[in-house]
Picture 1 (tube, helix red, strand yellow):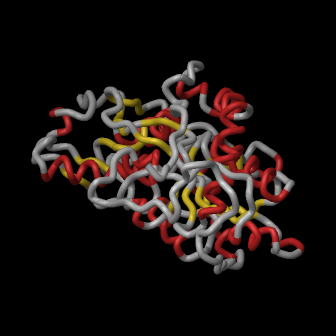
Picture 2 (picture 1 turned 135 degrees about the vertical axis):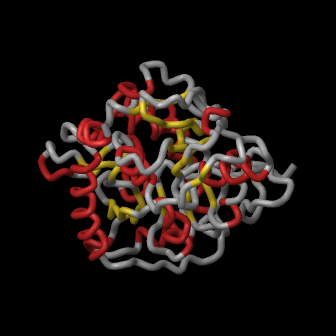
Length: 343
């Protein structure tokens, strides 16, 4: 039974085995790219909207609604953007941390000439590059695993991360986020034949996979410690990349995966033997992550998102995500953004 299940899960170009091999090859090239470091000055920026708080957003014990803890949009250039624009020649590019193995979000289709990165997140990256550098292709992509998203930003290896990254209070201690560009929630992914029905008692005595540093892992650990899920749930050792959980599920090494529903839907599209189980049990928002002191860049991205939501977001959703999440984007479109104010 296991052999048949693994084989069925690897059918077609979208099979994880084929994609993993391609991604490993692509990653080897990415790792050869030189690390680019930046040393932007403090977070002071040019003019912005009225009522904008000075300083950078940070998480604290009273943190609520982290998706609202971002500075107001601005078109002004500041030290961070100036440093990006000052790069010379071939290096005059926006350096962005992305995924390259999340189907329809950030991935390489080997059937396309050049197997260039494409997907919903990649469309947004091109839009940001167009606004800041005047060229949508002025991007140096760096593939980074789930557990390296925050270190890559903090260490200046990338200018930003656009990689299905949930805005959270805990993460606001380490990085700054843009306003939300996508709404999702945690869900359970398991084989269609599994008795698991969702994030409930059917997970008892089951082994569950999550990625290191993911909000899914934090939620599982917190809920198990608090007794909100069965004490017999086995939380498997977290994996570096979220896609690794699907591979482990296909190999029969775990019984279920907990991850963002938007990602889980794409993984289910890759493997017809698995499916989403139950409804989303959290509400989360994806944002663009940047250095905490890169306030001018955060404000510029927020301005870009205002325009992108009005013209571009829906077309990208229709192209990449409607097949897996449905033609009605209402549940995925984030609410109108709210920003930090002095009040």
